Image (tube, rainbow, N blue to C red; front, top):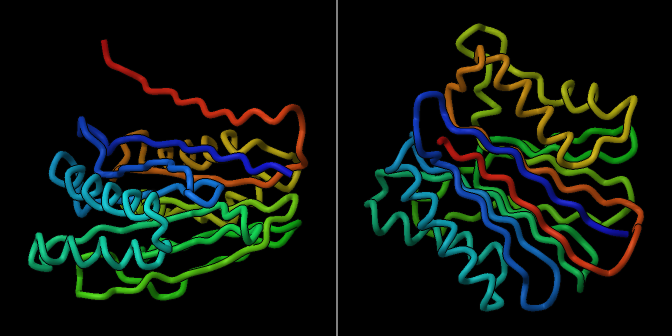
Length: 235
């Protein structure tokens, strides 16, 4: 088996800097962690908050700290720095090679979608953003790594897409329509979800949008680990 990870991101319309920050880090015991944070509001201030949170989390994970403890520490740091007046959502998705599981830690009202075969589970347990209080605990979900597993995580730009037109995005149905008749790559699925959200906002995203997709596929090819990034730059 192999785990493939893909991301699609776009800024809020007419805002030059995204308040979402995403980083990938290798775990000291093997595997990878993907950390996605979304700072309150948008623009430069939100970016500073999300970067502070992500730096704290990946630093602790690199030292061997458990994901849940890293999330709590980041929340405490944000609460102390901003006196509880600024919040930030956080998602951590860790591919743990020791346990052969994917561990999800969520401090975000945005749900996580887990797809197995034809079933799409929505994990929307109540979860508070970081920075609202001390010792805030994330919602932890652990999933066995099995072929065909797809996990979809996103910032709240997806949740709010289409709301101003009275046509909010049905994420579950969107995932089903993309996957039921084909076998999309993680990048194709992330791109399709992002494209639909942007269309619902009349091609003017009302918020920063980030979509993260993890997919477990049968192993193919060599033992080389690969990652590619595309960063559009205005001339």
